[in-house]
Image 1: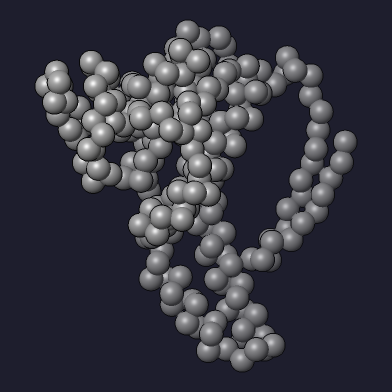
Image 2 (image 1 turned 180 degrees about the vertical axis):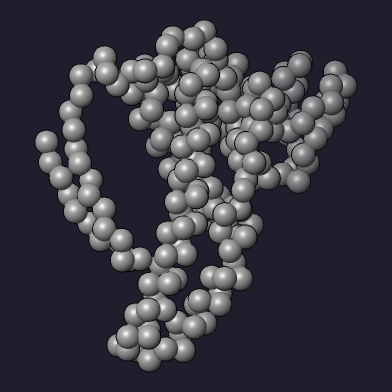
Length: 219
């Protein structure tokens, strides 16, 4: 229907082509009865109610030294010079490489969840509010929770799946999945906790994913 040619800061050109396909050609995943709850975290990226863990791979963090070196080189170049332009393109290419790796990983994780499950339940996270916490902001931006949610939303629509959002104020981490006791004293640093009421020992994020699944299915 249309085509758009664009140039990135790294000097690459991309041609984006918009096509229209019949709905039957878009849906390629068969129906399944599987349902899953997912908890997004800082230590681990995604923890599912099935016990599967997708790591936070820290793409930007692993390239920190190289980023700082290229930024120093750029700052030393004279404004308007060809050398400054070359240094800027080098830095832009590194950022693009990091972003490409991140996007590939987000697609791989979202595709895995969509492929295996008919219903996906997750928290309706306030990402803008979360990044105001300086202790969490870098890790949240690292994996881009907002982009991951966007991918899940359009892919569930494409592949005839369903996504359910649980209220962000629902105490998924603090509620014992075994007996329903709410541990109001639970801190962010507590990765595992023992339920004072039933004695259940459970990993914080896995417990949250189980609760998110139950609440999502209830909704």
